[in-house]
Image (tube, rainbow, N blue to C red; front, side):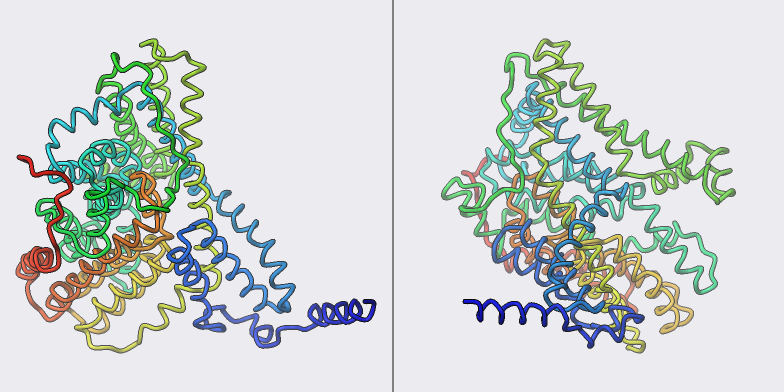
Length: 573
């Protein structure tokens, strides 16, 4: 026994003493340049595990752990120490993600809106709205089109879209036996795709800023917002995904896993797949007094959320611009406070995470006062309901924190840098927009962030397009559009994307089931964006000829691949 213990002690000591010379010699170089394909290990592990186990929390945790082990081993730790220190590093990454003001604002926003929805539901507002919409949604077609229309109306922010539309439409689509996966898809397809191309949204400032910086790098002063507007016809994926939702909703045609989900909902009444867990601890909130249920108990609080969000975007952005370094822009904002240009700039400069949290908090107070004044609950009971609503989204906050932590790990490993390095210096110009679109999708899918992907690729795409086809301004604009829409395509498909997580939560769907059913649709629309969009456009075919062709291709694909799935007996829509 003593001899065996001695061998174990000696073996452990040797493990602690063995260094990792392969990577230790390259500490000064970038991780992406030193370890190459190994930078892809964390996202690959997280994504594959998520699909296999359907346990998102565990999968993200293991993905982060694999990344911290790689970094520890790279910086000279032996295997055992790399595992030990890698585990302790996970806490630092999670704390760092929570300490980030933007991330903290998003979590507070999500939880506060959860409390607001609980108050609205307890006052009977959600039920009254659902019943009102149900009278207009006489079947699965109109139910899905109403969901799509609500998503388009909440164009100003993708997070707000995912958090508002789902809880409102869920009772309506449930009644029509529309699967939660399909509801999550419609919500997700009208979140980032519409916010990314809206003329005024929380995305605009970032996108316009990237375009401006990229043109500045090649010595050109341009109207960046004007360039942004010119990219809109080339945002094939965003436009075609919105069209795809309408066509599949009108025809009730589905294919792939979504078809199976819709058939399951129709044939068995199971709106969620068997053995699938929803990433919320949601319980059915009781309506306290059905006799006092009115749509105003929903419209006033939700309307307040939207109104105060708009006002907040303007005021927050205005403060940021006036206090910033751009004196010309600040003067324009002061001189023309309500011009379209000022509204656009203020929305872009605002901190959406803070504004939406503030708006949700004010709307919650309004809902609380309404409930107390109608004697639906006491102030103390209202607070309890609000807190209970926040608790239902606690697991969503955990998933978001882990997703952000994984993104930070991949950033330090240089995952995106490695993927960008695969883009060759020379290529036929006709392929550039397509390659940018595909690379943007891969980076965004792997990292779960469209913003980060845009920030990485835009400074490369515009100079590269200018060099490959000098004097062709339309080609440069097309390439810029490919960056913006490719990033949204990948983000829309990724199981570690925050908008994907929030969309599945808002719809009450299992996250991995949402991704599995949505991914074939995203890939199909992405393929048409390339074959009928970017390639013909890069060959010189006019965009106003190309765009209608892509529309026809989408409709043809739905009829060729899709099979009609009637979720309830046919009614007049």
